[in-house]
Length: 116
Image: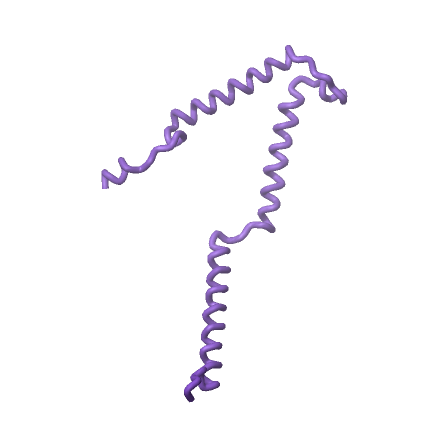
């Protein structure tokens, strides 16, 4: 049993330490991008683009809207976990029924014996 645990492959993000490193890197990039707002001159088209942090706020609101829309869409798009298994079983059952009905038809006809 202990051998099985040692044989399991470890992935990069299995260690919580690596996840923390990734998050710190992400936070650092976000902080640097906010600081660049002071330095970078943008060619704006609309007056609201002048607001400090407009693009991060715009992106955040866009992501939140996407999540909310996706949650709403789940109400009518989501299927059971075994939806395709059930569908496959139905098709398999239909094939079996069709094959058994063909066999019954052949048996009632007397078969395909050429010699008879």
